[in-house]
Length: 259
Ligand SMILES: [Zn+2]
Ligand SMILES: [Zn+2]
Image (cartoon, rainbow, N blue to C red; front, top):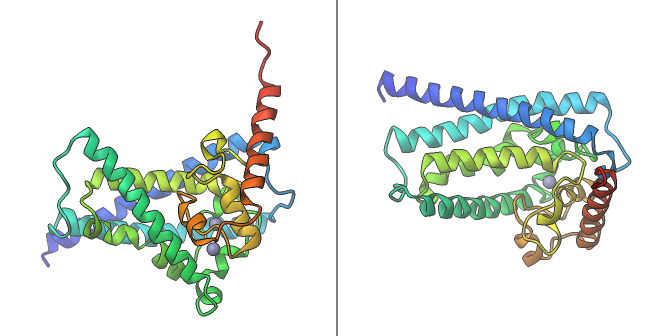
């Protein structure tokens, strides 16, 4: 490997880390602002201590570095070394379809890896750290041990070997995942009608229940795998409907009356 390609690799990882870190902080502060104006959307009465939230923020900053390393190496292998499945000729339909394909594939990857790290052999060693937080806050999104990150986020390292996807589409998908992950840990039901069960899209309640109950609701983008494998929590649909309806009704009441 030449010195130039090593520099290109280091630069790719560094830029990826800067972008992910900026997205994490901007998303966290933006959702915290939304939360301040939406106390009626709060899902749990319980709150984590300031110390626990600080723990999650510090660990997220570390964990994002390992995600950047995997994403950056994956991008570098494709863009600089020419490895992986070449993307289809660019067009709007190709971008849209490959974005959806990447979402479906990552959701599948995440669901099965997440179930694996909930197994009795791996849970304490790999995943318990993330579950110490029972009432998630925005800062909890990436609060995982590095080995946990390797399990669930290694999709970004190998994605170009799995589907013909343009780097720009994969970057857009990762940013979508970063923002929806922060919203999903916000402790407030922000999803709205799009997540009304049996919608395939997850609500905030979906992952909030995962932190409360543990062995259920493993997926990250869609509810399909949980429904198919019987791992959706028994109260999920009812609670998601109640939380979405309560958020909607309170928003309507607080909206200024039309004259
Ligand atoms: Zn878990
Ligand atoms: Zn979580």
